[in-house]
Image (cartoon, rainbow over all chains, first blue to last red):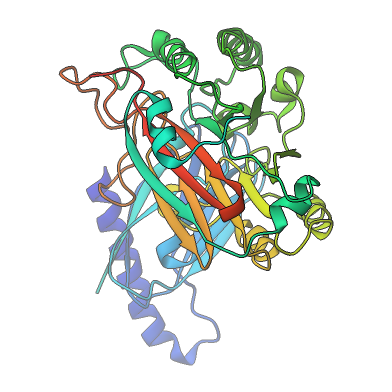
Amino acid sequence: MNSNIRAAVIAVAFFIGLGAGVAQVAAQPAEPVVKITAKKFDYTPNQITLKKGVPVVLEFTTADVVMGFSVPELGARTDIIPGKVVRLRIVPDKTGTFTFFCDIFCGSGHEDMTGTITVVE
Amino acid sequence: MKKYDRRDFLKLAGLGGVVFASGLTRMAGAADRVAGQGGSYDDFYFVQLSDTHWGFEGPPNPDAKVTLKKAVAAVNGLAEQPDFVVFTGDLTHTTDDPKERRKRMAEFRDIVADLKVKNVHFMPGEHDASLDKGEAYQEFFGKTHYTFDHKGVHFIVLDNVSDPAANIGEAQLQWLAADLAQLPADANIVVFTHRPLFDLYPQWDWATRDGAKAIELLMPYPNVTVFYGHIHQEHHHMTRHIPHHAAKSLIFPLPAPGSQPKRAPLPWDAAHPYKGLGFRSVEAEVKKDEYVITELPVQKG
């Protein structure tokens, strides 16, 4: 599943990237959206691949308690509020694999609630 | 009160261990004024235990049901007893069941009641307090942030865990500022807290989100030392002139910051039980604003 997700995200980013190029005549090209569901005690997906310099909107939902999403090396974090769709726009500025984690203590499995964002050229 | 020098202290610690000296030599005077003793002062020592995680079960510590009891016995076995004992959080291992949380706290309280030293200070870790904002903790152990004075040193206990987002919070920061404002500029100050106040390794949540604000408030005071837990290993760091000393755990050690992909517990070493676990004695040389830290094992061998 993870490799499929990775491939899918790259494909979306590539598609939108092409779209952005074409859409220079358009007003506001849509940015790729990666939907992430947080629940006790994991994220789905928990491995995400993005392209350096390509804006992306991470779209979070949770049906559980308040959770967090933090990836310090990319300077991004947000609260994830039950009942709301929380959007976080990021533009990865470096390549590498970066850990994200829940930074709001949410229960007995909190410390295992992690994932990775891999940023490629 | 007997006065110790460092050599005496190593003898009285009795178990041997690794010694780390921390602090800044400074002009004498503040300790006397804070203590109000007009030119006299006493060195003393205390014991720091941390991250006992009572209630934890799992392969990282197959001896979890007796580790805390052995640590209590080890403290009781010190040749000379400390002035006080402090537990720097994560007294209990977290549980999603409020009833079980209280059961663990009651069991922890009963076990540490066997300490010979009755002057014991507690504070919560995120495992104790983050799921109910410290409600159960306060039922058993009282306030989550407070101060006390001991022989010329002003001790400040900061709570950076009752907020599950790891904030100290504006209200507590204002309380801290008001407390510090009452002290002479050269007061001897020791801060106890659970999480690191500085960004040790945010990728593993080893930070306090607004910890920099607390450090900023402490920074004008030249004689400040911070002792904390949370990271399950000995660690020493300076934020300018302020040293921060992390203590070992009494349940399982964690890897060095960033040394492996995940902050998973280091595996139990059957050939060396209790490896990486321990507690520490801290000798306060008040007049020098110096703290001699001795790391001690749970058991000999």
